[in-house]
View 1 (cartoon, rainbow, N blue to C red):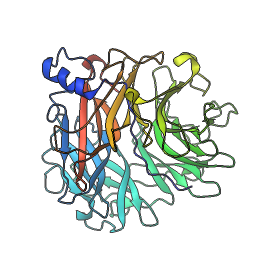
View 2 (cartoon, rainbow, N blue to C red; view 1 turned 90 degrees about the vertical axis):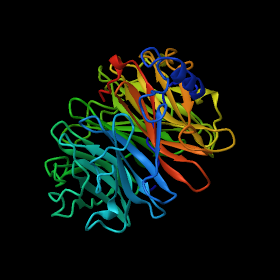
View 3 (tube, one colour; view 1 turned 120 degrees about the vertical axis):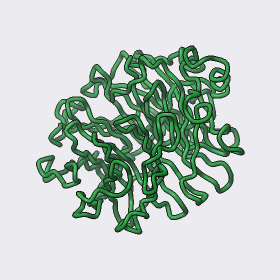
View 4 (cartoon, helix red, strand yellow; view 1 turned 180 degrees about the vertical axis):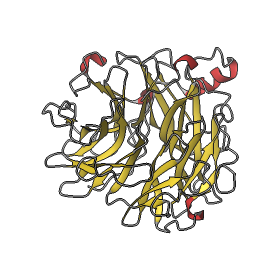
Length: 452
């Protein structure tokens, strides 16, 4: 099965956004409840941008840059050309970045950029501010490196081209503490398998990793697709995704820092974890993080029928992949966010951890009729909803204060930074018009640190 291009966002237990608006309006920022819109970000906590004059600009991946700005990658125009914006911590376009210093770029403006390159899948920042971008192009994928100010591609990469073309379909990228780039993707085989590769800071394949620079790992008798990853503090690499058997199963693989299947992970000591949690139609994984105790916290979905019905799934396993009885009694949290409909496959796309250990998940929630809201949920260490957040630990909202006639929001990623939780993606404001969007909910600044 080819890699499914789904958004990577996890949902957190926030309260209803209507209540959040009231909280943001009536309470001072110093006393607003966790989950209220942050009035210092954008307009009452939300911001929306047209990157081009096209009616179709889709934001997909938001990351935090070393000096506190945000970078959001996406696809612009009817041809889905790679594009991006830089945002300040307050949610405005960052002057001085991009080809014209406007805070926006179209990758097609760069000399030598391949015309068939589009749809960015992920991005990651190096300590010097350069941004690595992974995406798709006709018949394959690309890895590109942006200069720190976004004025062009880094000529130190790809013999001056600024990009290279891996031999596999890319999905995620992360930068290690040693300033190497870990790239996760998929090899279409029989069955399809996950591939993990390591590149140096100029995107040359590191042949000391795995077998000649990469490692493949799969699941017997079924295709597997990766949708999220994290780097542990000890350098081990953890990938989460879905095994496409009947029923579907959440898949986790862990490699050592050197690129070998980790014998300390999985019931068979082979670096693999798989479970459908006894459900009829199966589950899938979307994002994963390691907590301070070495446990793995992840988000995804549970299918409720064989078409489009679904619930959010949030779970935690011990470091070696064993059941964690300290989280929700040893069972995953499977729920409809704010008791909403199961229609249109709502799911937790993204997960992050506060410095105090509380678990934040963001994702999509079905609107009445059609479309989606941004949604968030927050959990305590024991796996119960955190009732100090939003309404009963859950919240949802849209971009209606930023643009009229909002039809749908499509959350794609989440970052904890600057005293709040930023959920970002795309917003559709008419039958045709789609733009980049982001919303920020406040949390106690003492605990606003993501240590993934």
